[in-house]
Structures are given as C-alpha cells and as structure tokens.
Length: 267
Image (tube, rainbow, N blue to C red; front, side, top):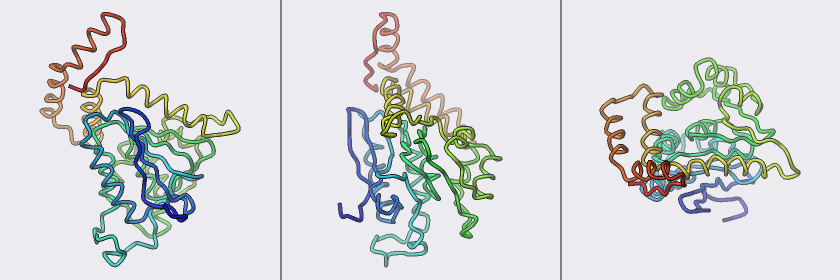
C-alpha cells in the first residue's frame, strides 16, 4: 500500500470471521471507483464462502469513511477503472446488503455521504464515542439513488430519513443511537477508545458465531425482504423447511437437552 493508501483490504482474523478494512486514512477513507470495484470483488468472494459466519466492515485511522470521492463524479473509463457504470456505488452497497451472512459495521469514526448508506447496509452498527454523521446530498444538489432511500426509510423510518437527507444536519453519536442508526455506542472508558469499540464488536461477533448458520442466513434474508416489502411466503417457507430438516437443528436440540454448547456444521 502506498502512503496515500489503497483499496479495501480483506483479512480473516478468526475462523468464520472476515474483516474488510477501508485503507485510505490520509484521505479519511473516501471511496474511489477502484475501491468500489475491490469491495465488490471481496463481497463476491465472501458470498461463496460456506465457512463464513460474520463479516466486519471498518476503516483505518480516525474516520470510518468520508463517502465517495466527489472528484470522480461523472468520470468513466478515463479514470482508469475500466467501468463507466453510473450506478457503481449503489450496486456496491446493494452487494453488501445482499451478503448471506450477518455483517457488522465497526464505525471507528465519523461517517459522511454515501458511507452512511454503506454502514446502513450492514446488519449491525457499532459506533465509537464522539463520532458524527452527515448526509449532505441536498447541499450538493444530488438526488440519492433508490435502494439507498429504501434502506433509510425501511431501517430508520420516514421522519429520521427526512431529517438526515433533507436537513443535512451533523448528527452526534448519541442522537444516532436514539434514531436507531447505531445499535451500540461504545463508551469511552479508557485512554484508548478503540478498546471499548473492539469489545462491543467482538461481543456481537461472538453471538453471531455461536448461532446456527442456516438459521442466521435464512432469517437475515427473510427479514430484509420483509423490510423492503418484498416478502415471498413460498421462499420463506423453503428456508424454514430447510432448517427444520437440517443437521444444525438436530445438533441444536441435542445440545440443548444435554446442556452443552452446540457444534453447528451449517448443513
């Protein structure tokens, strides 16, 4: 990686756990087109990993992400990315939301612009003390893309979505917790604020790693479909039946009866 940073990095800190790290700290982890393509490649790889149980998305440095690099707005193949897709950002965020395994946004700092939707596409968000959020689309003259608007309204409600999009306010971490944007706000309990942030992320990840993979994957997809108004009862019944006849359910019931920790296989 150069001193200017580089594309998002993928690592596997523990069995079943993947971490994607935005890696342009000198530029507040703003996202370039090459970063979006790298994220899509990471998501595609992780979507096909049957051993995966949880994905954590975070940033390096003092900010989670400053959003899309607006200098590249309107650029196409001349930017050297090999793509002229005007919906590249939207497709990238949608690919994150579509990951079959639960995801956690580890918000190590403030989040601005399109990065607010990137974090919202995760299933859980853990914020660092002192972080802030701002969605400045209205101040830039931008109308946000459809799936992002749906995510905001379905996950936060219409009043919160209007406040964040139309007023373009800078919102504190405490307010984000009250709005439901943050699931957990890490307390500043030590000289190193990342200690509390990491503890909360690890707590959530441990809970997800302990769950039955088939049930977690199925219910994540079904809940997101309900939120988007796309519920297909037949598809949900299919997931329900698969879990009902799975080795995971048999193991879960046996472990419960024996008062031991289950060892799920994802089958």
